[in-house]
Image (tube, rainbow, N blue to C red; front, side):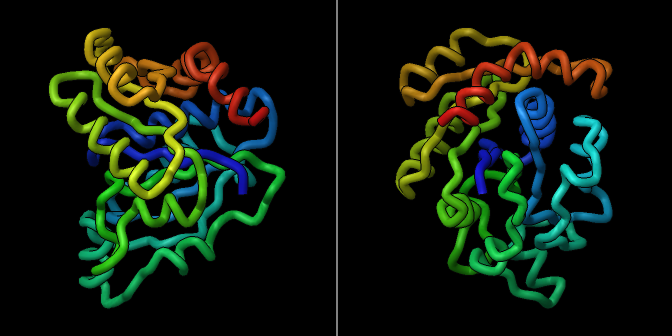
Length: 218
């Protein structure tokens, strides 16, 4: 599977919107797909449905296999309360089989979110072997959170290919993250209003396409 894994510095940081934007940008240069391996709180929050809408996805661009749990909790707790067990190997086995597409894979929460009592989301990232895009807030606290995320990924020998900062532009935080990690902040995603495919698509084409083309060429 070729693609990138989109993680975040926290829950609710904007991973799903960043994922939809990357789908828009990647589609300009070839076949693309989106996969959410682990989704909790599925009855209230369906990230696949959100990406379908924001990226105007066709059915064949979405992969629906994976863990789907009802309660909006950490995967390890949501699974325990649902009376099921999940592990990285079984999630990895559900990965998309269409090798012609470049896949945007969205994580659950941050990299150290537990999947079970011994494995974390970062272990799934390492097992899939995909380069990582980190979605980070642009405001106060993001330097610490982003540096911790990058360090945790590098400890597992995961390649961090870039950062997208979400929120009002903050050049000081952007430059601090770039200098201290050596990872480029390749896009700054403002709080778009209205948040629609017609607005997100042109932004993604302008802000992300240089990065997404380099991923395809790598």
